[in-house]
Amino acid sequence: MAGYGYFPGCSLKGTGVAYEESLLALFRVLGYTLAELEDWNCCGATSYMSIDEHAAFTLSARNLKLAHEARHREVVAPCSACYLALRKTQDYVQR
Image (cartoon, rainbow, N blue to C red; front, top):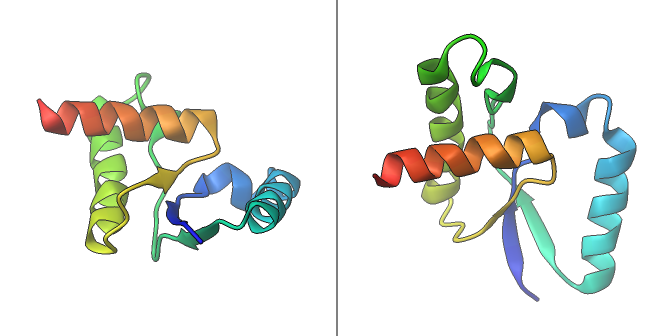
């Protein structure tokens, strides 16, 4: 059984609870495990370009650090805004 880090983001813990429930059920049926990042924070997508890009990068970078410390090689981020924020941060950090 393969396992992945899991970053649910604010949406899936708030208004998108049904989306999270179906996602977790699907992964169980497929035989994959998701390990939610401990102590994750907002990804910064809401303030990403409109308010403070540096602060948004900092928020996402912390989540990537948590994934790295937990030794997750892959992280599932089902929310498209969270995925984009995490991906942009990863690209920014790797430059």
